[in-house]
Image (tube, rainbow, N blue to C red; front, side, top):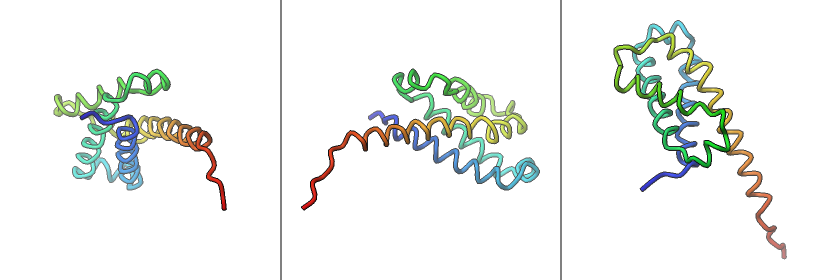
Length: 125
């Protein structure tokens, strides 16, 4: 069974939120904490995997979404783990992921607004 864009977008947004919590601890903590570094790697894998499964319709609607970049990061983390650079991971979680998440959240919000506007009002008694 395939998962829809909303579920995949939810996975990406959840992972982005968890990464934001790691970022709040600060860069020094991140570079010293192997647990948070490994957690960030795993969350980036989730984002990359979910992004790679987003529909072509969504990708065409959001052409600036960095799907290829997310997939590439996921592949390096999963298959070339010895080459993962902490500084690049920090850059991804502090700059790239928040932008990605913001673009998805904006799209989700606009779709919610348009679907809410399209629903007929329930008559009151």
